[in-house]
Amino acid sequence: MNNDWFECKVRYEKTTETGLQKKVTEPYLVEALSFTEAERRFIEEITPFMTGEYTITDIKRAKLAEVMESNDNNADRWFRAKIAFITLDEKTGAEKKTRQSVLVQATDFRDSVRELDEHMKGTMGDWVIETITETSIMDVFHYVKAERQEAQ
Image (tube, rainbow, N blue to C red; front, side, top):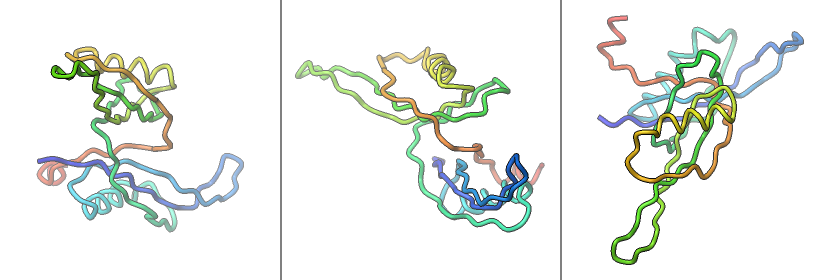
């Protein structure tokens, strides 16, 4: 069974640090089988944390090869890294790059590079980091099988 990642955005009224009410839109990442399931699961996940009205404003497929979570409790930011796997075409001798996007959880930019390097340490082929950018993703919700949900 192949799950996909969906970026879901919610708009709600948030109390700022100064005590003012402000409308904000925040993105989250949800692992699901379809758009319908992503929306259902997203609503299940965020409802306990929302007070007042909220609106799901967008759901789109996130083109990610992998989500790399950190064991560090201080890693509260998400970075999108574009990596390229380098292969050599045996016929022409030309270098070929196959690009993938991955999401890396880290404390800061330098930590994201360390986390990515550590995760990719056992990779057999050559690869390079082409870009790393911080995202505004607030949290990641993994797929949970129905049997596990009922047992909880």
